[in-house]
Image (cartoon, rainbow, N blue to C red):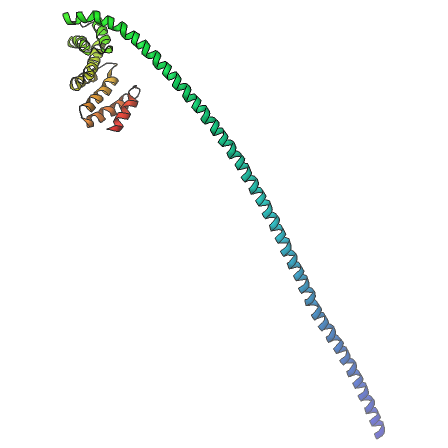
Length: 267
C-alpha cells in the first residue's frame, strides 16, 4: 500500500514536471518570437525612414538647383535683351542729334536769308515814305493841320520814319479837335507812342489813360500795355505791376499778353 502510493506520487510528479517543462518551452519560444518581432520592426521602420529622408533631401535639392539654374538663365536673357535695347536707343539718340543739328543749321540759314530780305524790303519802303514825308513836312510847319484822315496818315508815316516832332504835331491836331470817334482814339494812342519814343513818359502816360477812358476804342489793349511801360520807366513799379496784370486779365487775347507777363515777373 505504501509502495503503490509512492509510485503513484512519483508518476504524478513526473507528469507535472513534464507539463511544466512543456509550458516553459512554449513560454520561451513565445518570448523569443516577440523579442525578434520587436527587434526587427524598428530596424525596418528606421531604415525606411532614413531612405525616405535621403530621397526627399536629394529630390528637393535637385529641384532647387534646377529651379535656380532656370532663374539665372532667365535673368541673363533679360539682361542681354536690355543691353540690346539700350544700344539701339543710343543709336537712335545719336541719329536724332545729327538730324537736330542739320535742322538748326538750316533754320539759321533761312533766318539769315529772311532777315536780309526783310531789311532790303524795309529800306526800300522807308525810302519811299521819306519822300512822302519830305513833301508833307512843309505843310505841317507852315500851317495848322486839319483833324482829318489825311493828317492822320501823314502823322503815321512820320512816326514810322522816326520823325516824332512831325508825328506829334499831326496827332495833336486831331486830338485837340476833340470828339470821341475812332480817329481821335487812334490819334491819342499814337500821340502817346510818339511821346514815349521821345522819352516823355509822363505825357505818354496821359495819352494812354485818355484812350482807356474812352467808351469805344480798338486801341485799349495796346494803351493798357503801354501805360504799364510808362509806369515802369517812371519808376512806379507797383502801378506798373498792376497795369501789366490788367493786360493779362482784361485783354487775354492781346498780342502783348506774353510780354506783359514777362515784364510783370521781373518787377
